[in-house]
Length: 178
View: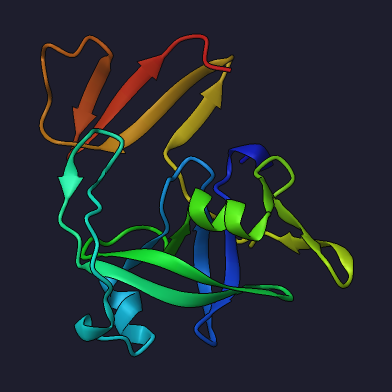
């Protein structure tokens, strides 16, 4: 897999615990923490702060939130208290760091280099390498054409982009994807 197509996953210290599969996503407005991780940090519902935040996924579907919580995040030598939205949903990552944390710490995430760059007032430029473990995605490239595989509901005959379907996986064919 090409390096620039990989998600930017890292291992960070959060609340004094080493947490792997931290997704750094500059397109996300908020930081997201799963209920499972919230319990791992020993936080309870009483630790939640009041909020009026509503989040939705890329399809526009809103999800129910458990609450909002403040946690200490450490990226190398920089430590910052960060706001997280706790959700009951499960994902392929343990924690998602969005713009709120990225801009707050002043990091520059680079999926091309698979690194996170940031300035430390004491030592200057610091670099955190992304985790280089294998990460499985459903994309295959051939002759400048892209075939994407995504879990979905049963076949939709009105969707012209569908090639075929097998066991809950549909194959979508796209032209001229670069």
